[in-house]
Length: 254
Image (cartoon, rainbow, N blue to C red; front, side):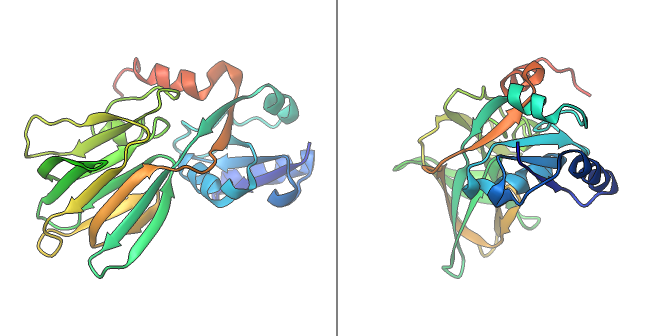
């Protein structure tokens, strides 16, 4: 099997990269049958973004601080591990941002799209689902739209729900909401288009981020699940992504 190895720039990941190439050889991603990513979850997200168009399965090995999307790092039996792996199909969110100058920005997110206040002033946001305004004014530090794969990340830290991988839903979660006080977010059908309008972008500036792509001074943000192809993320069968997400709901606080 032909592999393309990609590694974060940490010493431990680069060292593992050299050993794997010595053992298995490597080819460019365009000629590979699978991509092996060495690093943490942040590096995995960058790998998915960089190579999504190739439609190749991606198998990660944890060589970073956070490894929810990764498998254990082992040199031996790579071909067997990949052959036995379970595939999780991940579908990204599309973010379309209009900034205060009228410029339109687009980006994809496999974890979440988040809006955050840029100053000491709380954000004032209008929340619309499809063509219906659900909240005329949400006063908060921010808000995020999360995929099931991303629901255990920033979304969980903001007290959002953990979503089963095959649930076909998205999480809409406020960050430190002040008004309405009792609104704690919503679970949305995955085909919902979420429109978030910044009500006072001059006095209360807001930034928008899709995974690691940030746009500052935004006026309006549209978020929806992409209609394009997803990516196949491979996991060892004893600890696949669906099981990891389920286990997170019973994990004790650390």
